[in-house]
Length: 175
Image (tube, rainbow, N blue to C red; front, side, top):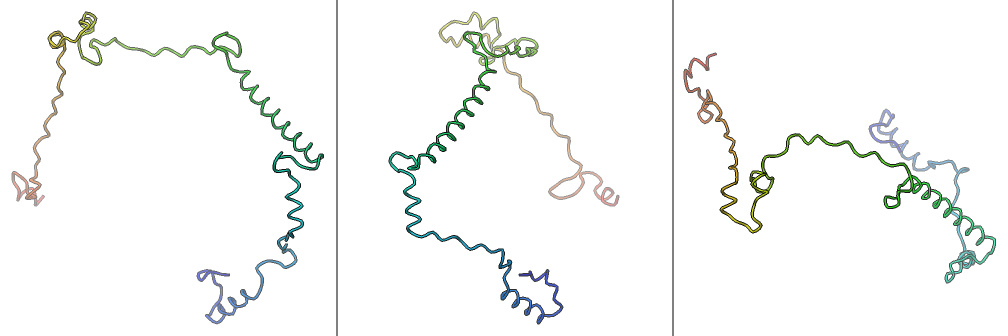
């Protein structure tokens, strides 16, 4: 079926005839068509009896041997893959196994902090801090936090409510 914008017909009558012809002819070649295989009840029941549902084994010994051999091959392949993975691992307790890892590069710590991170006290004062909380000691040794002052933005040249310049409005508008 051809879409309307891809229709090569020159007139409406030609497109109707092409549509009607498309409905009457098959879209596939009849020689290549394979109908669905219908299985009768007797055949279906015979196929259901091939597997023992209790033991989950095939009743045919040759088919069961092939299945167990295939499962054994899959298990051996999995075991060899996992063994290969573990061969490269190192046992950190006994020190046996793969190559040792080099220690990670040390980070540049920079300068040590002057203040304790949580309470913002001087580091030397924090080392001598009493075990029980003493508010007077903390307040006496705590460094005040610095406030950052935000710079005020400069005054605007234009009043945004009236949409006029503050100074020389008539001259600025003409420019």
